[in-house]
Length: 85
Image (cartoon, rainbow, N blue to C red; front, side, top):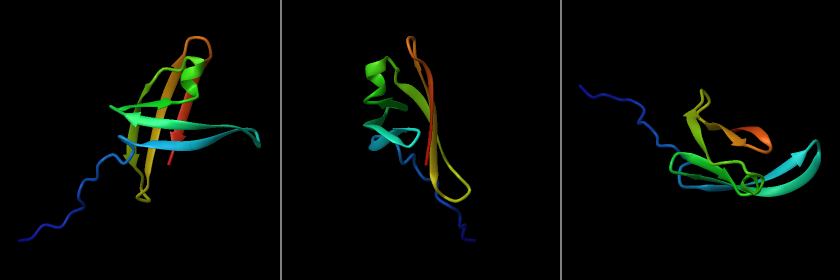
């Protein structure tokens, strides 16, 4: 009897870099690279402010898109929460 099932997909973020634009309210602030490697994410601008690489969670949502979330911490600047699709 054949079995049909959805193949488990791998994390699409790992090993990739995504260029994003940061805004404060509606005003463009800067562009930044989010670098996903080794189960952690690092922001190219964030590191300038002491935000450490952070472990991230990646999961497929009900619509079939992938989402990630993480919390970066800087001793001097506090906590930054990231969520993306």
